[in-house]
Image (tube, rainbow, N blue to C red; front, side, top):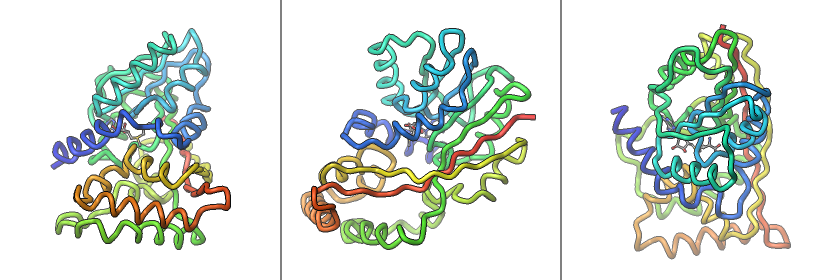
Length: 275
Ligand SMILES: C[S@@+](CC[C@H](N)C(=O)[O-])C[C@H]1O[C@@H](n2cnc3c(N)ncnc32)[C@H](O)[C@@H]1O
């Protein structure tokens, strides 16, 4: 089951990789830059689920020439794109390889810090990923995580409105799909405390990330470019033109006078120390 779930996630992000962070909507970039603030000059940092490098590139800059950042990702497309970008930018203190958070291919105690931005809730066996992260961290090493936080009440109505625009085109969930969606996992401080039970000095910093969509079409493209792609791919192909029309017109009706649409995403940045 775990292998099947991982293959599914890898496939979604593999197909999204070409468009990930490329559709003119800034989200993962600012989140990654904030996450990488923990990295210190000279450190060896592991980026788990590095994607196209939203937190890997700023961390590489922060650790500088005497430090090193190693990114791993389950999706070959992400590894390919991030690797190409490393080469394009001439970054020599970072590398990216295929890897799985549940079984990290590194010796014990080989990193000063581990960072993981909006990844861990996609991992079927999250406690196993936490054990692996603790294993590869040196004693006193630090973990920095970004996850989604609880929705604010004032955003819930807008979210329901947006969701309802697509609901008529989505198939009914299969009977097995009664667990929480990835975004719903790890959404409370308690769930993070439980996951990080082997860590100390756990601290949270919540942050509201604004996402600006220049046009409704940008929003539609963005939905295909990351994890929401799983939902978008479940829309039957013949229904896609109508679904797109309904969605973009719905967003247009909610847009600002200049045609832009802004959405607020509650995020939680967690830091913890390996004893
Ligand atoms: C929402 S993206 C975040 C990527 C990057 N951290 C960022 O902030 O842009 C989630 C990433 O986690 C990766 N991923 C999912 N499950 C994984 C696992 N078990 N091991 C490693 N990476 C995984 C996906 O392939 C995807 O690139």
